[in-house]
Image 1 (cartoon, rainbow, N blue to C red):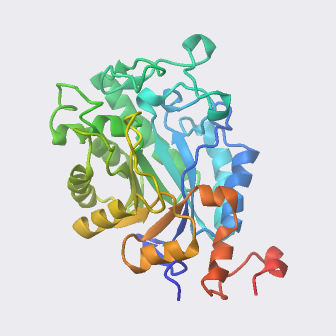
Image 2 (image 1 turned 45 degrees about the vertical axis):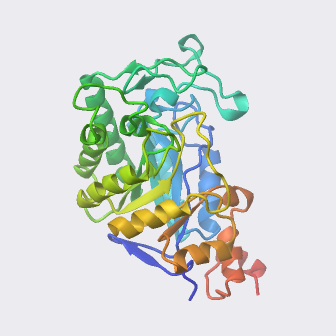
Image 3 (image 1 turned 180 degrees about the vertical axis):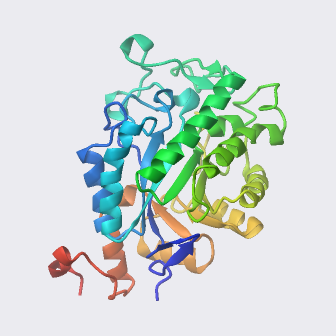
Length: 356
């Protein structure tokens, strides 16, 4: 049996294989609502054989969006459209996950294909927030430092979003604490220069994340998994690094996090990142080895043999795929054939096309 196509039980859910559709922003919503694009995008990946399908970053409040076109889960009206998607995903043999997110100082910019530029409040944008009044770079908005009341609102927004996610039928939540978005901004000493209980020391800088987790756990069933995506390093001197991540993950494991989705970067705009095939996998491997937690590997993982090797050598437990699944929504079915897994079930509607 191929490791890639072996099942894995996490809490009370069983993934039929180790292939995860990684959160990928689609910038195709109006007022945060899921629509036909999201249904087809996410549903086709379930039909294509992935074990877990995770939505793009879903904003926990309007001001948490990266762009005005982001998916949202900040109001009850969002539930119905998401529920349609989760029902279809599960009917086609996959589990449904949602990534809950707040963009912080990287918010209020236009979608990539609309230029990726700052959207002013007059143009429908909003005032961005962050731990400190430090912009991401000189083309982004100058953030307001969150007050304690503002931090309490963020924590409650995540909690309420988790409650809505449960009602919408999701069985996995991933908290986005990576890529320079709000939680990562609090973790990093380069973007967090607060002098209160949310800044300064390591324990203070991780406080927001721990409070978000506690809030979510108060409404999320104990038998369903909680993942956290982190940037294991931000590739910058004096910034958040691998040792910090390992220290954090020990704590996250103790408070009930089930898996670390291990990425890197995103908080320092001019960081020099040595991009190449599997370049982020060693971080997942080291976190897994040092803490014993389940990890997900990401980053230019594109072939079935590459994925199989990562799993067989114990570097990670799940493979999070993004661009490869944009190129081929049915990649898992192709990978099964490449790895000799002839017993992998295809949708009955597609059986005529099955690789023999």
